[in-house]
Length: 121
Image 1 (cartoon, one colour):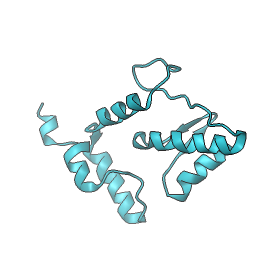
Image 2 (cartoon, rainbow, N blue to C red):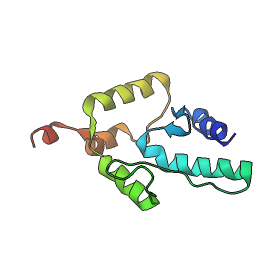
Image 3 (cartoon, rainbow, N blue to C red):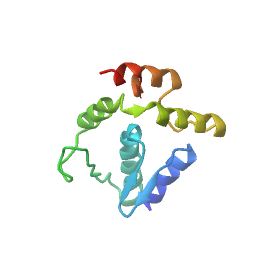
């Protein structure tokens, strides 16, 4: 039941989330939100917030990941989206009227694209 509530939350705001067995796949910038939604959903079903497991690159799969480690990981991923990915993402958002990325086009140009200066390095 909590899985359904979690997916319903993101569906209602137009954010894609894919449930696979006992896991969810979502944009890395929304992982913190997913954890909070799942904690609320489990609390409504069983009366307590159940912990969620999270795997990050370079960490063992079942190692506990703190909120600070998660935030550091998200911040470190800035700049690795290629220009083509971001262009397609913004084109999709503009065509559908759905804002699925918390990154604005202007911010992407500054912080999230691998631009010409990055390619020169």
